[in-house]
Structures are given as C-alpha cells and as structure tokens.
Amino acid sequence: MKIAINEVQQWEHTACLRLHPEHELICSSAPLDTHTAADADVPSTFIRSRLDADVLERFPKLQLVATRSTGYDHIDLGYCAAHGITVSNVPDYGDSTVAEHVFALILGLARHLVDAAERTRRGGFSQAGLRGFELRGKTLEFSDALSDMDAWVVTATKANQPRLHRWAGTIVTGLVTPGRRREAAAIETVRPRGGGRGSG
Image: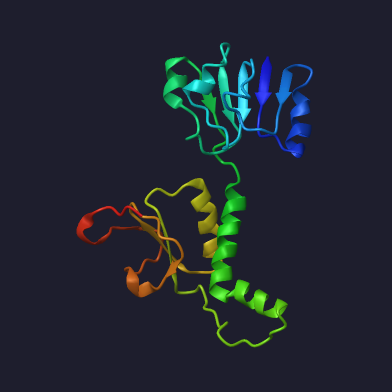
C-alpha cells in the first residue's frame, strides 16, 4: 500500500519507517494540498492540511484518510462518504496531557504565578498584589456533554476539592465563585436562567 504522510516531524518520520518496506511511504513536512497531493492509497495528515474535494479527488485510488488528530473538521466528510472512503482519527489524543495543562493554567491563575515569575526575573521580590486564592470552595463548570478529556480534568480537580458543575450548552472558562451558581455536592446539570442554551 502506498501511504502519503504529510506534516511529518522528525520524531514521527522515525516512527513511520516501521511501516517500510511492507508499505511504500511518501513523507513530507508540508501540509497536504492540491500542490503536494501524491498518488497514494492513504493520505495521513495533521490539522494544517485542508482535505476538501479539490484535494481528495487527486487521489484516484483513495481508500482511507487517516488524520493524526482528534479533530476532523479539516476533512470533507461528505465527499468521503459519497466515495466510500473511510476516515479515521485519534479520538483520545492527548487527553491527559491537555487536562494537566488546563489544571496548570488554573493553578497559575489562582496563584498569580506568571506575574510572580516576571517580577522575580526583574529583580523584584515584593509580594504586593500577588495574594492568590484557594480552589477549595470554588466552582468549576463544564459543558453539557463531558468528554474524556473533561473526565481527566475532573479527576485532577477532585484532589483540590472545588465544586464541579456541568453548565448546559455553555463552556465557562475559569473559576467562578459559589454565589454565581447554585451549590452542588457532585457534578450536575445547571440550566441557564430562562431555560435557554448559551452560545459562548
């Protein structure tokens, strides 16, 4: 099988060599587009490649599109369905990594870590204006449908004991104080006032 692998980094290129010689490989660091499309059975890309009909029709023997990402909105699924082309993604790509980063940002916000670090680099050691807040007793809200990635954030959150709310239809970033939403002992659905669904 002839496989065109685009947006390849060096560490990926080394891993892809395991497919050789059973499969013929075409590796490129460039995104896949109408200028870089190759005659292959399977294109494998990341998120910078726009796999619309103009690109996909340049693969006359196309059987499978394999994106090395969780998202697949860069692929024309309608074209693939109409031509019997299978599309595969990586549904749990980086869940724990992203969740840990989310919680690092939350802790950085709560403890003013960026401001404190910048002040120290400039030679200042005053603590004025750097008093943070504890996560205990705060409320962390999630969208209506908890993803696997959200589940990782919930796991990290429980160790710090804030309340967890699921906010129907609206992703609320950051922490909110308990007075803004009704209290919850566990994850529960909290509807916006008036029963409508948020948009932001």
